[in-house]
Image (cartoon, rainbow, N blue to C red; front, top):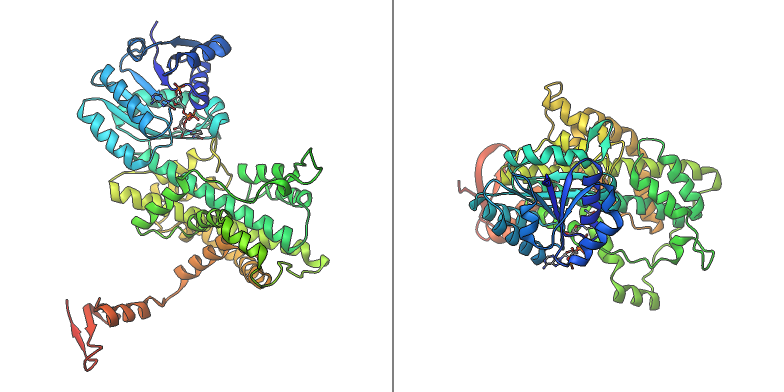
Length: 485
Ligand code: NBP
């Protein structure tokens, strides 16, 4: 018997994915550079389904049925390149190499081109959900050719998370489209986590609530519009008590946020595509600020002055402020997602991908870290446009549902941002999202003045509101205007 799918790289992600595949009736060829890992998988889980272990890459490829399909789950970067090369050498035209790691989409574009030139298919597939997702159902974002999707689609559908009866996987687009969308997914995850963090800070420092009490608030929030995996686990973390000290867990953790780079990629890419993803950028910057050890140590010695973080809200008014924070969180979250979808749209335009944004929102409803009820609203909005039931919108903020949601939340949103500023509590993601919203709403922006400055010092020219063309004022001469185009 031959295997219909193979997995290369049997560390935690690869072995969980291989087991998930085997649990769903696939015959799975498995290979790892160091054979001991393959033996461990067979010993511990070999009876869970049909596995074909291989000692060499040649043996592995020979055990696959055609078109041979193999998912690589090794360390990103050079190891992934090495395994792609080894597989391409051993495979034949028509076979399919899948990279399931967290690769940068530009690497995926490069690899796809090289592998296509050899007659094989290369699929960069974003996989979200971590170890748990790999084993029990991830959300998957494959790129690559339509033809490869014919073989790969049913296999991935067999192991994907299921949300409202639908598997959380869709063919995103050609070459690097899948990894691009996975990158933005991670960026949105950063923004979402930052917004939740700011909400916690406002309730903790601003209102003096305990982590337990705030955990209860998140439990409540999880029952409404904010229902999501991240809100759910936030409550779990806040309710956790440190066994050693009896203190709230959140108080014994060093307040320095780590990051592995996908958030940074999202922002760098957004900058190069000129898409303002302020929520994601502020989230990345805030993690950066938390890690500025030298500056924070200096502040501990000689504190910068300012208000102490107390919002000065009477007990009787605290519940109303908690509700205001919930609304501010919801409105800011809508902005962050709208910006993320803008980035996907800009990427699609730049690289010629046809990405179904409604389908992207749908496959994020299960298996992945940003799974949330709210994604139903996003998929509905894009689906309505696709079905011609609604006019196309340039930003999710102009979709009727979201326009109304922000409209009803905005008074609270403004109150929260203003009070946070007065109390000295940093809310970079809340406030930048609000500024973005107000920027979009503004009939006139100070960009006109900036154009004047640019023309003054660099003769960069400007457009006129009353006439087409490009103009320059002779600033160092008689200040008359000339038309340059
Ligand atoms: P690691 O990223 O820790 O990589 C370990 C695997 O890479 C082992 O199988 C190892 O083989 C293999 N490997 C290395 Br290292 N160098 C190699 C080389 N030169 N040639 C062949 N194989 C090599 O594994 P992981 O944590 O399971 O993650 C796998 C992929 O999944 C990564 O790209 C990671 O970014 C991604 N990931 C995704 C998520 C998610 O939520 N989507 C979570 C975690 C990881 P050996 O046994 O012989 O050393």
